[in-house]
Image 1: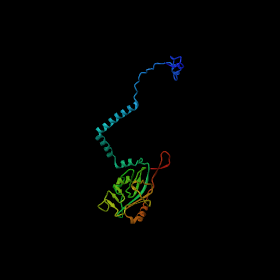
Image 2: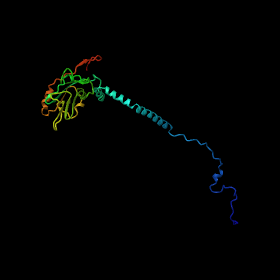
Image 3: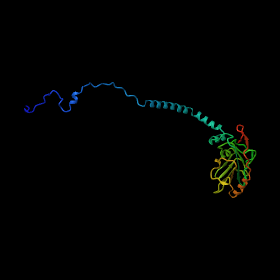
Image 4: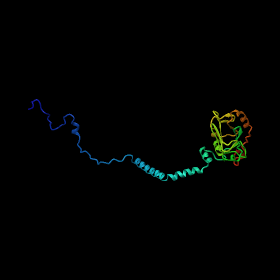
Amino acid sequence: MLPEDKTLPKDIDSDYSLPGRYEESNSTYHEPIKHEEIPPRPKNKSLAIAIIAFVIVSSGFFSYYFINQSEIDSEIVQSTLNMSPEQILANQYSVGEYGSDHAHAAILVVVDGEQLNFGLPQFQLSSKYIHFEDHNPYLIHKHATGVPLEMLFVSMGLEVSEKCIFVEYDFSKNTNEFCAEGKKSVQVYLNGQRFPSDISQYEIKHNDRILITLDEKSISKHLKYLDSFEIFDVPKKPSINSGKDIFI
């Protein structure tokens, strides 16, 4: 039995007076709303489609290449073979159109104390972009922009390395290759000054004078002889459009 002075609250059936129950007693109870489950949408659907399409296209391309590899490679090789050495070099150096420039320069190549004669027929007009003409043995004609001396050398079978000069014709000996002895090297001069780089990569300017020799002891004599060569002025013609003179 409970003590007489200890009594329960009168509203024992109500829990309003119990701590924490007031809010719950004033709120209306609702059944939880059931939502239909929506299946998750695939993520990055567009990216997946793009990847699949790329794989299919790539597979088709590589399959075609491997099936026809021999034929494709043959066509590439044939296209290259159909190009002349001049065309290959013109593409390599991005040479301008014929007539885009016109310059004259003098060159002297000396081996065994004698000048190589570029006035011979096999050296004349061997390239349309840069050549010798009119049986002149020293005067270079350049007819386009971006033309290196290598195009002239290749067209006439001349090669200049650090130690040797090679030319494709017999000149005073049974060999076409002339090399410096011991620690000596091929001497190259441009406009009276030693040229330290590969002269074949040089693009001539009007009035340039180039000396290539194995004879180190006679440099001054060869330079003086080179200076005696006449370099003709570039011919001009009147422009139809402007009436002014232009280079041809």
